[in-house]
Amino acid sequence: GAVVSQHPSWVICKSGTSVKIECRSLDFQATTMFWYRQFPKQSLMLMATSNEGSKATYEQGVEKDKFLINHASLTLSTLTVTSAHPEDSSFYICSASRQGAGDTQYFGPGTRLTVL
Amino acid sequence: TQLLEQSPQFLSIQEGENLTVYCNSSSVFSSLQWYRQEPGEGPVLLVTVVTGGEVKKLKRLTFQFGDARKDSSLHITAAQPGDTGLYLCAGAALTGGGNKLTFGTGTQLKVEL
Image (cartoon, rainbow over all chains, first blue to last red):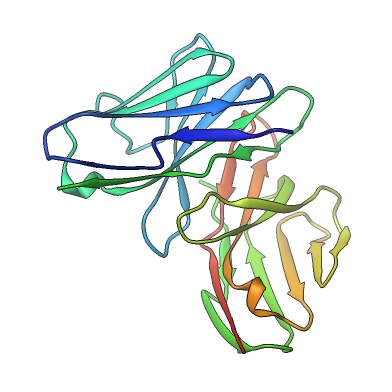
C-alpha cells in the first residue's frame, strides 16, 4: 500500500511554455502533499507543502507565481511550471503523507522536466 | 534552517567491503529517515528511527540514531553492487514542522565488482 504516482514521467517543452505535473496517491488519502526539486547529483530540495483545499506553503526562494500548486482533492496535487526556462530543467518529485503515519512521506517516481 | 550534512559525499568501494555513512546536524529531530535513490527514480524509504540511541538492522544495513537525536549513521556490511545508489537521510522537525522533512546533502555510493 501507500503508492504515489506521477505523470508524466518525463516531459520536454519549449522555453516560455507551461507544464503541468500530476501527483496522485493511488490507495490512500493524502492529507498533505509535498513538492521537491532535485538537480543532478544533488539532494532533494523542498519547494512547497500543500494541504487539500488550502493554499500551498512555499519555501523561501521559491516563486509561487511561477510554480503553481493545486491540491483539489485528497488524492491529487498538481504542479504547474509557468513560462518555463532552461534553468527550470530538473527532476521534480512529489510525496504524500497520510493521517496516522507520523512523519512518513511516500514518494512518487519523479518527473524529469527538460526545457529547451 | 535545519541543515543535515552527510559524509562522505562520494564513496567508491569494492564488493565485500564495509562502509559507514554519517548524517549530522546541530538540530534535534523528532525522527530521522534513511532513503536510497536510484537514477531517474524517487527515493525509497529504508528505515525510520525515532528514539535517541536506537539501532535498527535491515539485513546488511545497520542504522543508528544519536542519543541526542541530532545525528545518525548507516553502516553497510559486505557491500554488493546492488547497494549502489544515492543515500539520503532526512529529518522531521521536532515541532511545528507540519511533517516537513529536511533532506541531507546525500552520499553517492558505488560498489564495484
